[in-house]
Image 1: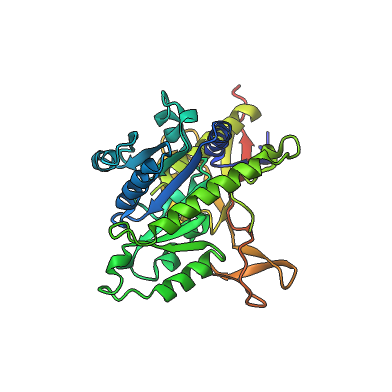
Image 2: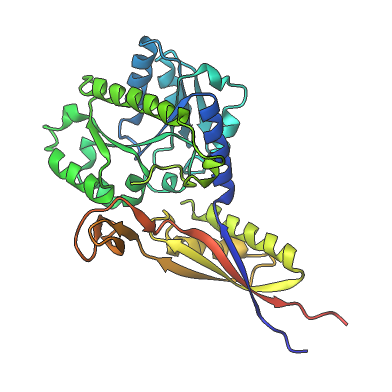
Length: 246
Length: 120
């Protein structure tokens, strides 16, 4: 008997499971009225310092904040962030180079999310793999420091493209390392046209007010957005990556 | 290197399909892979070869359709290719566009199956 080859249509997104979990998380965050921010960057960009200052300032301002921190092997970052005196949980990923939505869901077990205003998720230091995984966040920050050079966005266009806000860190070192801020802005504008860019120094505090204002405004806008009635099942129709169009 | 976990997900999807389509040998798995998906084609192929070893999908070939980045250009009012990953500009008029219409794909879209010969 002659064997016959059949072509079967499949049409399944490879990360379907992650996307389903991320959508569930996003719905939960929305129901619980917590604004969720994720941070991606390469190792050593000053992400933890930036987050530590952000948590501290928000807490002092009376906001209820918490953080999840992804790290390959150590718990050093969680210990550092603990200095901001807010709840911090570490997700040790072992050999996995990025966070996935299920890791976030598991790490949140036992936490009372409705008691929070802001939740921060610090991804593993890596500008490649985290790009592919939606974590259910409202806002994704991509950070890079003045010491890394202006062409970082051109080297890692995909991750810059998945982000909603770019933060250039260590601006206190800009002069010493001859950082060309204008070139950096232009490069970001080429790979993610129209994205908001902030040049900060967590150390000196420069532009941290602008960042916190932008953050509060975004939380406010998101809540206004959500209180506007939408068609039934509107969440079903949303972009699976949950990003605003344009 | 998240390509290995992507390769394992591809095998899971293929196994689910096999379950639905009865006993068959998988000759090929066809993917659509966008250049903006964050997955490197060469790394995925190597990871897949490693992942399929010793499974019933050992003979399956990965056939990858490379999807370039396409934008909606507001000036031209249609879909156009992007100049490059480093420059999301319309390849025709040079205008910037943040509206990516294609290039994020990461999808198994078909499989080639060969039914097993019935044992006498």
